[in-house]
Length: 570
Image (tube, rainbow, N blue to C red; front, side, top):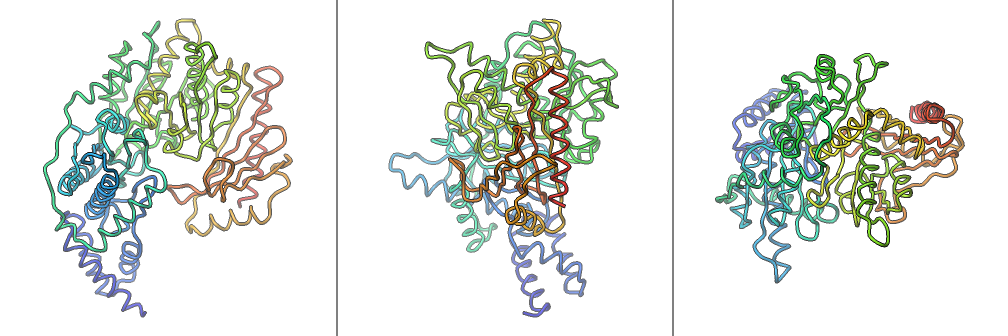
């Protein structure tokens, strides 16, 4: 096919898309690109090819991408197709169960561009297809939607959010009720939903999809989330001096209600970041993990002498914590996801031990395979079960007997009886409860971190993210590591390499390499599921000597492994 023929084919697809697009902004955008292609603009031709030669893939993470026109972007046409496909899946699943009632769905949305529009489109199309649809009453955190799926006993849930992605992105997360207990979808549901979405895209114009009346959830659903979440904390014996930021997201209103219900004083706010703003004007990237994202929090904390900084990402399903550190340039340092996860895991183990029966403590601590092995050490010490899962709370939340789960990317599940997903609000409350108890004893979070090292050893970690411009580069690096496995990394001997591509133990197949090293070190290598990155996770442990000696030994091992992996992935 000549280039001219290829352009004409894409122009025909674009014109068909334009006829069904209800959004004047994306219609104008696409019409201008089509005109430029007709005028012979090669950049416009490449742009049209990128938009129409493939679709934004629907998977276990749902949909996520840039808001723009075309099937390889997030827009009202794509969302309508997704809603109709999900409705068809729910109706087919219900038809296969003679005892099933009419399927139902609850839909939530955050403060990003088009979130409310995408949510309303979804509710109307679901209702038009015969699914009982309920829209949450206003923009709310993702954990409230995850809670509502279980609270309303809904067949499914949809959250319109792109979490901490760049400002012009949006996304579509799907949860299932019933036997899935409000967890995010996993295989084979993702493929089955994707097939229904593709069928809609191939056979129907979204302009002709029937739309119906949906219900709006009462505010009492949010109030019940607040009530149940407040139970995570004991009444505070002291009040930590806290600074809070919502990172221009939707966390603050719900967080404020939870803190009040739990008996905590209102924190000092980073006012410039407290209200939802889809432009995220004060941060280059609205992710607490990114350099500079917490600079305003650090400045506010210095002004008020804060003992703790609490940050949620824009949809409040993640939590970042920072503490005073005189050696840091900002006077504060953000704790890693592993540090917070291990502290909260220790707290959960203590609570499990406190309510243990005659047979001792029961329950499971779970984390992703790329998170710190330190959680297993906690589970062993408290005679609890431990489970390492593939990355994502769709897997962590399904661990049997779960009492606590986390992943190093700032995600924590502290109340599985209420929410089966990461929840930055309940996790913040659990952390504040710990900080309050420590303050009442005259101790700090830093003191508690030392106590952890003394009891469980120093579990140090680091991460390398290799961003690529060509996705094929990631496959090349993974293939080379498989074909030429290293005998050592950074001078530390490799004991074995476990390839998870065909599954490993009870883990399903995943494109992950686990390099096990002498001395208890470990390196995990995997492609990112959401970005053009290869990710390398490094862990080392030191269990002998003083606290300072353990920290020094573990840090030295991590530094050596990091240098070695940078060479191997260059």
